[in-house]
Length: 89
Image 1 (cartoon, rainbow, N blue to C red):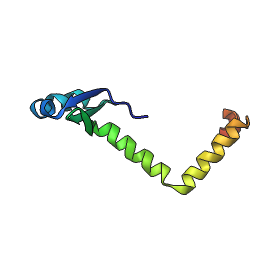
Image 2: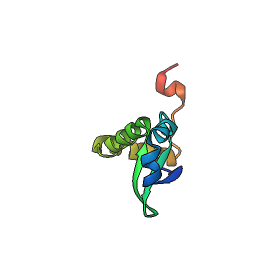
Image 3: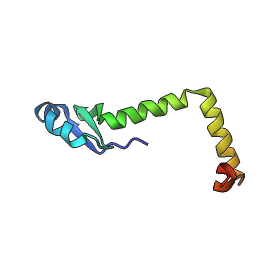
């Protein structure tokens, strides 16, 4: 779940943009930019953005989601395989 770590007014964001970029660089942080006290935009690190895109890609893949749903159902039913059964060791 995406959690906003900080809320920054747009005027402060404009004057300290480089500092904000350095703060989120490579992190999992998300910073909301507010206008008149209302969040209007979110600034994410590239790492976090790419992770969100990957999640969206998986969620939009019907075959992958069918497999995930099946695995979740089997796990809930206690149908687990141990390491040796899967990898034959």
